[in-house]
Structure formats: C-alpha cells, structure tokens
Length: 251
Image (cartoon, rainbow, N blue to C red):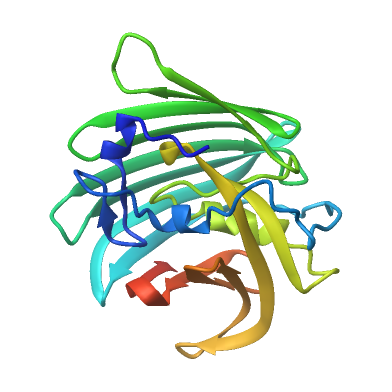
C-alpha cells in the first residue's frame, strides 16, 4: 500500500537523515511500516485519554549540532482537541526543511482530520479525513488534480507520525494504556509519504537522563528504536533516536 508517487521527492526525514531527492525512501517513521494484515496480538481496549493543554518549542539536534526547532501546541476545541506544530530546520545535507501539521483528535486520541504542508526544494500539502477505521488522503503537488488514496486500519486509534513533526509522538505516548502495561501495538500513518503500518510502544519505567527523571517509553520496530521521555504531567520532554544521533528536547 505504500505510495510511490513523485511526491516522495519532497520528503526529508531528520530522524533518519535520509533524503529522497533521487534516492530510495528511507524516512525513519516509514521503517515502522509492518504489513497491516499482520494480526495485532497485543491490541488493547481504548482507554479514555487524559489530554491537557500544552505549548512550547523543541530544539532539534543531530550529532550534537542544533539544526532547527519545532513550535507546538495542544489545545481543546469544543468536543475535540487540536494539535498544531511547525518545524523549520536545515538538514546535514544542506536541505532547508519547513513542515506544518494540524491534527484534530477525539478525546480518546482517535484522529478525525489532519492537514499538512511540507517544503524542501518544492512545496506539497495534503489532507486526511478519518471515518472510523478508514481514512481518505488527498495530496496536492500543484498538479491539475490532487492524488487521492484510501486506507483501512485494524483500529480507529491510528497514530499520525508525519515526517519532521515530532510533537505527534506526544499524542502517541498518551495513547499508550499504562493500566495494561507491556508492549502495545498501534496502527500508524505517515501522511507525507502515504505510508501505513504499525508500531509497538512499551514502558521502561522511570529513567534518569541528563540529571532529570522521566517516565520512559520505547517506540520500536524491527529496524528502529525511538525513546520518549515524559515529565510528571505526561508531557513529552525529550525524544531520542540513538541510531541517528538525533535528540529533540523541549526548551
């Protein structure tokens, strides 16, 4: 189900440091793509997710060098919640990156509507609408008509993990049911790449990082591991990708 349209030429993932400008797509989140037909033996019942307003900025660092930042905000919107995030960065290969996302989610974390823009050398934008376990994606590349694609998932609680928009991992952390614990699998969609799949999340308990104590979650697939560090309010304070030497930390 992976789309191979030329909108992939827009993609650059800071997490993996991989550009698709003339190369094979290696976006870090796409490494999480596991066949959706695989049965989710770790699937758990959807808890009532306790969102709370959050606003701030992440500093993006690769191999010890600051390369950009992301502004984010999570706020209530009537009977749902809105996530706004905007990233501006300069990649190690010289690519200037700008990405924005606006995600509307239900109180239990179920996505309802998502809009994004991405720009490296060219600009692209897209919209995803969710109805239950189904999603319809539309990508505008400036052509006469947008590219439309339908997706079907094994649960309506889909994690949106788009390229270079890291606050979305904070929403994934809130989808994890701490009452159940253990390893929990979630369907995932990377809208900029039209890539569906699944990922696993598990709690590692409290850990010390740079002198601070965090509630720690490990997000993983067979190919990649991402560490999420949450403060006492369950807000995402830091995200580490050890294999890529990437750190996204709250300022």
